[in-house]
Figure 1 (cartoon, rainbow, N blue to C red):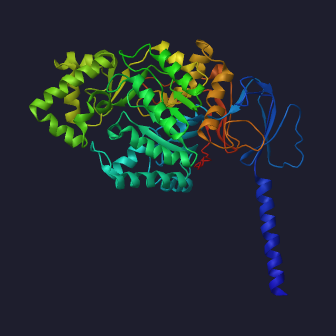
Figure 2 (figure 1 turned 30 degrees about the horizontal axis):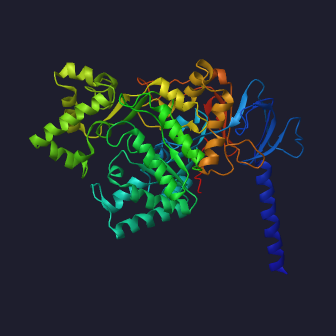
Figure 3 (figure 1 turned 90 degrees about the vertical axis):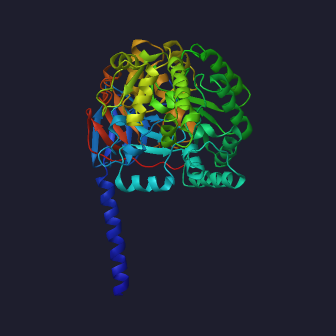
Length: 520
């Protein structure tokens, strides 16, 4: 009898604790907002009830609030309610793993509630280790991961320009399979960057086939966005070939026409993709709303053959006079290709003698040709980055208008796109230039990405979906980050909900770490 009594008491205690937890769970009633549900580009008046981590009810009239004890009412008259934005291309793995940056405020202040990382062929591996760490330590936004081809290749083959044996290719395929089993949403490549650039198309097809077997997506920084190697058009053709041979959905990352040799080719690229879509390929792309990129000086200006084997091998080649001269000639051509010495700005805050100065200005200051400046900096400092003004506004807008091109930040330190892409899209391209409607911008930044990249139950305001929501006055949304001050937070988000918890309240961060890893 005592055992039965104790068991019954335990059950009652558990039930009581469960009821207390339920009662203490905050419920939010958002009323009066102009609601863009993410799936449609038009808005409507809706009242929304959020309980726990889910959207509980939607109604055009008053929702019954009876039985909800810990209730917060938000009068959203004059504000827009939308799904939290999903950023399909970020480099935020290190931020999410950092004790002081894991809140991911650069994203939250723009209304981004989910980020996708592991892009450009670089990802954590094994990805489960990162998922576990983020779950244990807490993160400010949700995160999904691609498995990076470049990472897999480096772990198996190193940084060398070699082709895999059958056994090595099988090891790479097994690693992709492992990552997909652990929850990766697909395979990413950075075929412009070493060591991904050393891979032949057949290698990429073999690995993409593995990702496709798990229902994954192929995300790519194509082999050449300019005229470095095979050229922009041939790189588009290569990606379409990968899609045709594997059946995998294709996603072009930061689609662009980079450099003087390919300005104006957006028309041709768009037509090629439209034709492939008409043939049955599933194709999407993302784009950051700036005409300048930011990347490593080595990637932008050093020929790939010169970095075969890594940075130390590059330095050794620079000590060889014949190879040194050959490298200088090719660096000079790459400077021209990216728009000239005035368009390339050194971005290295710890190098005060070079930081925020163009190669043209440094050339005059140090009495060296621009290519000589590049080699000098790389010898002294190694992994320096450059901001490169290499695109035309006409191409940028042409891509932006396509219904399969979505917003993405490609967020990296030193470029305002990490802190400002979504605010800039609303401020400049919706209201100032009127390239897109607000509804189109929201759809391209939420539902479309969730649908095409396989992020379940997010990206739409729908009953039963996760409560990732943003509430804002669109006229007050403002990008504050600049190239001179690239870490200034955006403003204008009144409330940001992540999994039903308030992360931004009245424009200020609450301290919530409500994000979660999203496994496919």
